[in-house]
View 1 (cartoon, rainbow, N blue to C red):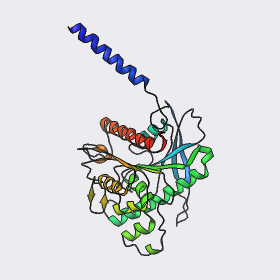
View 2 (view 1 turned 30 degrees about the vertical axis):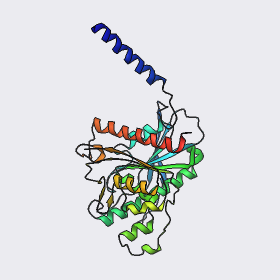
View 3 (view 1 turned 90 degrees about the vertical axis):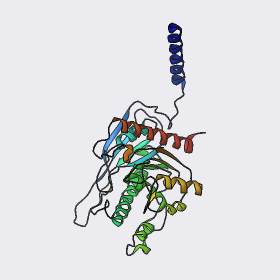
View 4 (view 1 turned 45 degrees about the vertical axis):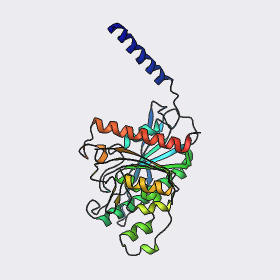
Length: 308
């Protein structure tokens, strides 16, 4: 009896292995490439500030090694840190860039302008920090459009992505405008600002535990959104709280407006999909959830743009 049970178990394992090995790997959905080439510290903007000092904004570019395709979709990744801290190597950014580069995307992790005010304490500073970062994002998009041949980019397929503050930047770059953001905080002169939505022609958004300042702004565009969030997030609330509209609120309103979107929920998990948020150390299990988030987002994008 025991011997027969053991043989049956081995046959089941062998069958499962064969099925797994027979799965056809598909570009943009599955990791096709084992190696990723990283080109670090590419200067995408070098402005001179009011003091005459030049500040360089840099990007790390991730590409699948030995990829022969002449044009690839671009994902621009922006880090978290409350608009006050962080850089292009912070948290899950390198992991997500590698995960998507292995699937055939070009990924660019960018540094952006950090606030010198108190965005973690004062809502107007938070909004201004986001607006300033969007300007950097748009400059990065312009840089890659100007260098489309160098990096073999399909400029009709530019996706913006991020976690926490980075996701907030991505959402507002598509669904808000300089006018709306400054009008929200009663900034003098806001009536003269640009009112155009999705000025950079973003194709889709990956929002990992992000938020919108006003969910009504979802009426402004029809950009697909993939969302991941923990229900116990106390940094960026999962639903609606005050001026912060988290992933559940976005998902609910997007559904009502017919905006293509999908939401993966992590019940009981907090910010960065951790049980107890620690900005300095994530841990192996949290990183495993970050990879799951990448798998979920890749599946959404594949179905949205590439599945025939």
